[in-house]
Length: 420
Image (cartoon, rainbow, N blue to C red):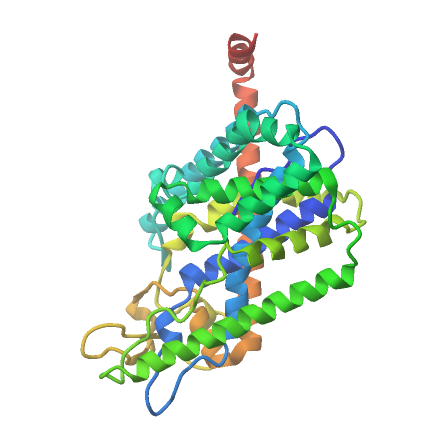
């Protein structure tokens, strides 16, 4: 999912910084599908209407972006850390924790103000989010520690042939679901994925195996991957539809039509991520200041959009697309339980202040306005969420600067006590 920018005194290469930004946007799209789309609205099927899956292929591709982006972040980590003789763990870990707790305190205050002054949108925040909800923080730090003391010394001693053999054998083993069942039972699945992807990134840095592969070949592979993803999804939706029509009750929901069978541990996903990485590695854009500046904010963007503050927003009255005038008809909800299951309820009166968890109402935009408007709406949300995270990061930088000025002497004395 997230990686701190490579800490180096050299000029940053903006092609990799741009890749970080685009990968984060892919993760935002993935989480919009995962957390902010009403599956039941899409999966409403009756014998009269048939399956309502006509616009889901685009959303399935958005869902795929997050899986690719997660892998790309670890690839970047291995690519930049493999040739370092001494990896500084304390500095990036300190930055991670600083951004995490500063984000918690700011969003906690905003959650209090939202509920205290009865805004049209209300939310909450949990101070334990930094320990539980943002699991990738500890995972990323652990990968760096593991690389510093175990993985890097091991990989740096290998000859090219042995290095390649280690990477291939590891990936082949992970390609079997039985291996993942064992690792999952041992709570080691994410670590195994991290080791394999980190090793691939390291191999790409040391030997550049794809440097002579033509660009159009890479683009052809990328296109084929997404075609395969869509075909696989269509096959699964047909299966879900058949299961539905075999049920006794015809006015019920099919649970979660989205499938994730080509998941992050898939060899195909890894190959796709490698191809995307290689394409960006070839971009001759030099160093662009605004790209590098935006890239520094991607971690805070992740913290913001995956926080309880954002994920648990509740709207009172009209949903966002209704307020923006995007929908042809008022916002609706679909009852998903009880005798009225499947009934579509129109929200006619905003003054009722009805709490609607589906406050972004992405589902209805696709259903009411079609795939083009729905895609544009999701892309708009992605950009706005990213910019809100950047704004939050600016606030955190300002607060950190103020704290440094106020406590500069104490900080300097502490550093001398710990390091000298």
